[in-house]
Length: 414
Image (cartoon, rainbow, N blue to C red; front, side, top):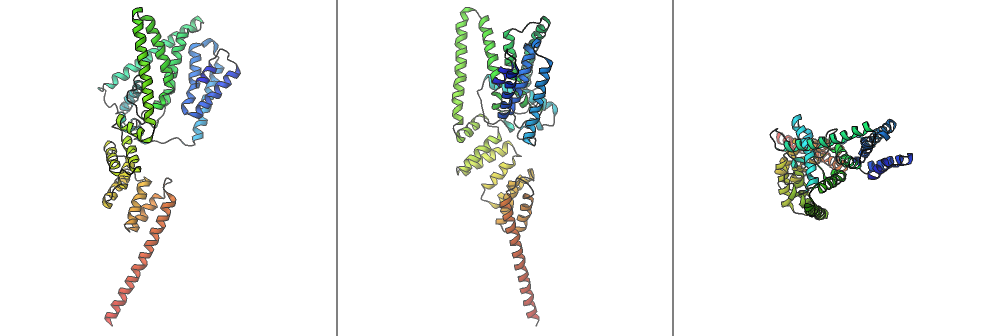
């Protein structure tokens, strides 16, 4: 993205540099969907800082390429991704005001992660960020403050922009730096902001990688302004504070790397940072089950269900750890009550009935399971055939027993 930006905004705006800019934009899009935003950044930066050098033709070409790449990316996926309420609870909130307030606060939440990344997690789904239901929620003040700051910065940019248009002068370098930082901070975040379309997560630290470029430049610009304005006797102290801040951020980056050493360390770090996230407990429970620690797995699944009662797969996995057939049946029926199309629960319940020799019930649930694409077709199909065969054998045995009983009855009347 930075390579695309450099070529698009270079002083030698030849066809080769423009083509190179588009090539790097395509490479960025192939790496991650957020890469397409660099085209918006490039043209916005040129319009805001070098208006007299940008033609409408170039703007239209950039817009055409943007729409084409978007269409190609969507077509490449064939189908749009589907999400459920546990992925992004705010998107499924019926109250539009609650949804709007929560979306605004998510911007604050992500900005706080850039300013002070004290609490990081590999997953922020489900109840990690509570919805903003009320106007009296103090988080609304944070949302209003951030909105005012962003609007104020954009107003300053547009004021300098119109001034440059009127005077036919290039914008000074400080404003170009401000434009760069704000565009890289805001534009790459927009696809994940839920403003234009629904996304499959509440928050994700990976979406802050590119915005952090703009944030670092913005901090550098602010620090240079502050340093120039403070008295000379305070400049040494200012340098020390800045050095301590940079060192603490570097130390946080270094220590955070240890959380990604293994699956165990990553899932354990999640338990320490987001204790109201059901998926965190579910993941740790899966890991405990794989390691043979059934009791810990049970506790984690129960906690996940307590935090998110409609967590179907947690109900299913808890059933697989039980030794009581009655409890297993109850847990699986609860899972299917929440999601009748959950193929894993359908398969497990059918297999339970098969083991209990209740073959007609097993055939019923295996048949439903096989209607869904996600079903274990080979395994379910084989077991369904076995159950049908057992029903036929049992039927023949019953007929033989009935005939035997009839023969005995005839002998008694002779």
